[in-house]
Image (cartoon, rainbow, N blue to C red; front, top):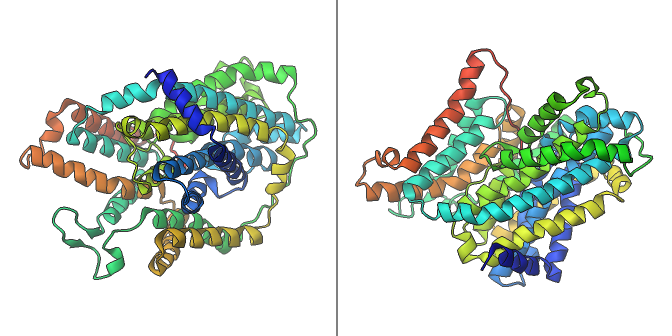
Length: 508
């Protein structure tokens, strides 16, 4: 079958009535998640995993997995859309990748052009979604064909690269990020060892024999941690809302935005491919490129529409690009794709080179659903701009109980264990403390998810080499991954020692 045939089959799966409903729910919830400051795509996806498990309970295993991933992917790129709304109207980024949008978006809003800014960000996001989708369609199978030739040594080194890449670009301190990666890997060792049957770090607690459930840790650290932060810091939505008059952009706005949208989409897609790079880097680079190329760079920061179009396109394209390493290599390139990977594994589906062979319906169904979702987002975002502006005003006293209810019921519905309910609260406190002290949470979750797979591949590689660790350096592909990982960590350190400012990534 050709790629086009697979895409058409995927479109058939995505257009089944229940999957259309799941796409719609995903992008709607994602937009709301993006609009509400503080929640972010990571918390939104983590919070919804147990709910999707309940919603798809009546379907077969493959259909349930497909529908759930379609909904969760919708939340992911929907949140990228929604994040721009608060950036433009309140000067408050809905999530970290929308920080750059505040620079010109809020200035446009203050000039009475909030509607045009929101419309251009929606159009840019749609175009970026299409471009990243085309890239995803044509790069997915060739990459998975290459990855299928990887042995355990190559996979181990690729996972090391993934962890180092996220650690190198997460948070404000690389040391703290590496500490969190190591902490995540340590948590992954809890439970009974699959090979020897020995208990590890269980301290005689039977509930720990299976290891820590990724879902409990993710929902606890992100969603419940955010609740503790909001309560303890009494955070509210105190910003003054900008007025929205005209919603549709003018012909001049469209003309000025066309090239920045195209450039931002392509740049964002390729940055999204890099493990650990994330949407915030994509939006930042896109903004810098537009400012460099502009004939009037002084207008940036004063309400230039290019300063909204390019970064918004870039951060949405990056979310599409980030799906490629996840689907083809089984390596998440951001915190949100790490949580999506956990959802795949929860449904007994292993993302990676065999995904397109073993589960073509799921893989192509999810890819095709992204086209449907992007179309829905454009239709949703244009007329509902004023409605989403009202969502921002949701009082914290209603929002916090809802998040707690979703977290508790969601985890209990999947785990049926009161131990996990205590664990989720403990993870919430730990998550709050870590985030408050600038310890990034994404490397912890990634370490917890990749830990068992790294251990498995390391054991297999050492079995092949009779315990000789040189196998990781003797295999050319493995050596290349390790060298890239080493450079990823050392180059920013060298630049910092020379007194240069190094851009870091705080994307969830």
